[in-house]
Amino acid sequence: MPKEIYLVKVGMSMTEGMVAEWYIPDGGEVKKGELVYALETEKVNLDVDAEYDGTVKHLVDVGITLEPGDVVGYIFERGEDIPDDPVAPAARAPVAGGGSAEAPAQEPSVAPVAVSSGDGHVRSSPAARRLARELGVDYRRVAGSGPGGRIVEADIQAAASSGAPVAVSGPEPRASPLAKRIAAARGIDLGTVRGSGPGGRIVQADVEGATPASAAPAFAAKIPKPGERIPVKGMRKTIASRMHHSLMESAQLTMDMAVLMDDAVKMRTGLIEEWATEGVKPTYTDLVIKACARALRISPMMNSQFTGAEIIVQNDINVGMAVALPEGLVVPVIRHADQLSLKELARESSRLASAARDGALGLDDYAGGTFTVSALGMYGVDSFTPIINEPQSGILGVNRLYDGVEWDGDRPVKTKKMNLSLTWDHRTLDGAPAAEYLVAVRELLEAPFRLLV
Image 1 (cartoon, rainbow, N blue to C red):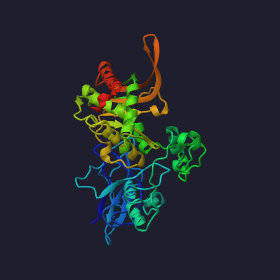
Image 2 (image 1 turned 120 degrees about the vertical axis):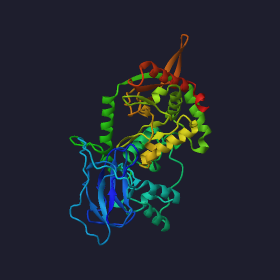
Image 3 (image 1 turned 90 degrees about the vertical axis):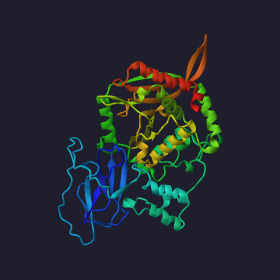
Image 4 (image 1 turned 180 degrees about the horizontal axis):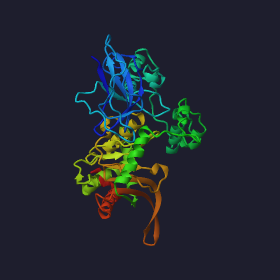
């Protein structure tokens, strides 16, 4: 009896997805554990592997939008008759969105494995990269046996057994933030760059004169050319749809407020030194997230959802942090952010950011957000209008740290300042309570040692 291949459901919020690529051709043989197809969802891309040996029969073509649980194919056992035209599920048009078959009650017969979808990176699964770190194998020098040359766990195991090149371990090259951004954009390995700054620090000029790594051409190919037509699909399509829907369906307003950051700067500098041996380096965004979470206790209406018939005040305070990737924006969630110490929060935000860039976020990492923080200060932005991540009621934008002036009587005093940009849903709360929430965040950041208790 043939076994169904389902469009697997990844997370409670998934409403649709598609087969982005069939790894096993129609009529091809598959073994248990081999990758069958690439699943493209609203948030992440996943590879799906088989739980049975047999012959694969496709029911849907690549790019057809379906609902979770729809049957996309079958795996026939050896000797079974394979019909030429088995019944396929009703597909939903990407825009029109008709109904489709109801999800079956039984568990799907395949299991997803997250992989990076960014171009210019070594094609490898997160599980393979984690295993490579554990075994001390340089996965970048391992030949992949998966579809399209993707490196899988079996390749890492084989490489470790055969004495593959050991991964280089050591301190991260000292480089300025701007040099790091340029290196990442151009595919340059900072480990190959000689620094000309103080103490051998790598600066902008060093990176601009460096030769890109072998991955650079693939990354550069993503830069659009004049006249090019870029299909709106995948993550970009989801972002476009959700942002437009958020603006159309809610009453969003934005206000800015300046924060004195002198004490926060001093505290962060001290904490970086204090926690250096533990590998914890808090960022200014970490301080803002902690202040936001603490302030949500004071202003619970900002931690709510508007459903039309009622406003639901959330029990938990889970703060999403926007992370920019080459292919779009993802928002992993720091759960119970108000209950975490600042050190724990800094660890978790660092883990989520690294996992997002490695394509290794788990489904739970996206779930349950009640408020969001989005930072653009690293790009020199002074103010912007962040769009609410529905069904939340608020999002806070973090802008750059800049030199400001305060007055001590008639004497000007140089200070460090930061603007915060709060967007809120006017259907949920009015301007005055929204301003009160922003004041609470400001007061916590201006007396930052309160964030440590």
